[in-house]
Amino acid sequence: MILEKVIREIETVVGRENILTSPEDRWCYAFDATDLAYLPDLVVFPGSAAEVSRILLLANEHRFPVTPRGAGTGRSGGSVPIEGGVVLVLTRLNRILEINTKDLVAVVEPGVILGKLKAAVEEQGLYYPPDPASADFCTIGGNVAECAGGPVAVQYGITRDYVLGLEVALPTGEIIDTGTRTMKGVVGYDLTRLFLGSEGTLGVITRIILRLVAKPAARQTLAAAFGSLKAAAEAVSRILASGLAPTALEFIDRVTLGCIREMLPFAVDLKAAALLLIAVDGHPHDVEERAGAMARFCEEQGARPVIRARTPEEAEQLWKARKVISPALKKVKPQKVSEDVVVPLSAIPDLITALEDLSRRRGLIIPCYGHAGDGNIHVNVLYDRALPGEMEAVEPTVEEIFTLVRRFQGTLSGEHGIGLTKAPYLGMELSPAAIAVQKRLKQAFDPNNIMNPGKIFPQPPKARAREQEGI
Ligand SMILES: Cc1cc2nc3c(=O)[nH]c(=O)nc-3n(C[C@H](O)[C@H](O)[C@H](O)COP(=O)(O)OP(=O)(O)OC[C@H]3O[C@@H](n4cnc5c(N)ncnc54)[C@H](O)[C@@H]3O)c2cc1C
Image (cartoon, rainbow, N blue to C red; front, top):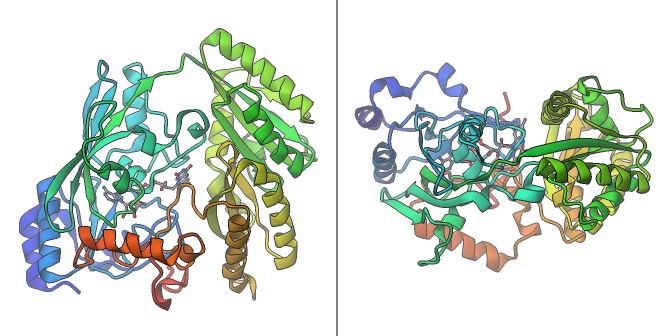
């Protein structure tokens, strides 16, 4: 609960027009892309780093929680204000401050929509590679805070590989710069990396310096259909070891394929158990040759047919279909829990087989798709809240998935973060000593625990239920 007099103070910082107080308005900022929702006491839209800093100082003085929020597309409850307080929405900080074509650097505010940034950079003949499927609506600040990835990470890497430096308003109010705007820099501890994937728990990112690369001259896309899931999964590491250097290597299983079939620019055999969606970037001649070789290689691995997109429009249609997979899965069941586990490449076939078995045992549909080229598989547990027993079976199923992943020496999250939904499972991957060190780091930055409390670290039962306050 924030006292009325404190709300008045916040108003003097950002202006009355930049806060929301009515329950109807506040509910709009209560949730993200999970099914979780917790009502904030106040929603605040700061217009500068200085305003962010003053709100954080007030939060320390009056001890209210502050939860940073970009576009609220997160998949682990990171921007859900579990302890109420202020939701700090960064969307007014939405300027692209600089695109420097000589230094190959962009300087941006955190509220810039990723898709707009990518388009502005490409207009200058350069390329900012990270491409989460949410690019058209997520913010670059949210990408940095979650260390977002996407299909082209196979060749280009993830958000972490492009952030050179940051401006951050710390929970205690100081504004610091981390990193450099040069391509290298090793002065002091690498705080930039510490903030990457910190899920809004260590500070509010108010400015970002990004590395850019040359725009690829050409790209070709192929779709390879496989008769068995295992054959498709086994082909993944063989393709990566083949020297054909795919830019993207996505895996789509039969259930998922069924949800996007009508969006594909060509018919895919109903008997296909899985599809590999592959992109190849480079010089036009090289790409032509490699795409041909890739098609032949996939055929040697048992793919039938392998279809090459004939035009850029067909390729775009294929990638559009890939982008809508997540919402399209709701055609099968109205609710889902989406995990984004990563396993070593050699373990993908065994993971897929084990998940088929788990699905049969638990009686739940568990479609898989995702960035197989990174070993990053989106495992979705579908359910219908209205059907007796289904919802109750979800959490134990998720726990079994994580157990399997750890058995294969994998990790619980490749790009969505821990947030609220995975916090109870943190101890499956980090030792008590490692968790204690991370908690000490958090305390050094945020001694009064005002910054996005209740996230990452295991919490009392309140935070465990995915849906108890769901709307
Ligand atoms: C359909 C769909 C597809 C998706 N596909 C992908 C994908 O392919 N790859 C991928 O990686 N993710 C994907 N996501 C997840 C999500 O889009 C990303 O995690 C994205 O980076 C979140 O950005 P956002 O602006 O929505 O952040 P939010 O959801 O608002 O916030 C996410 C976290 O970042 C923190 N945060 C936000 N802004 C700041 C800031 N300025 N300073 C400090 N902390 C901040 C929040 O507190 C929260 O913990 C997908 C989501 C959806 C709904």
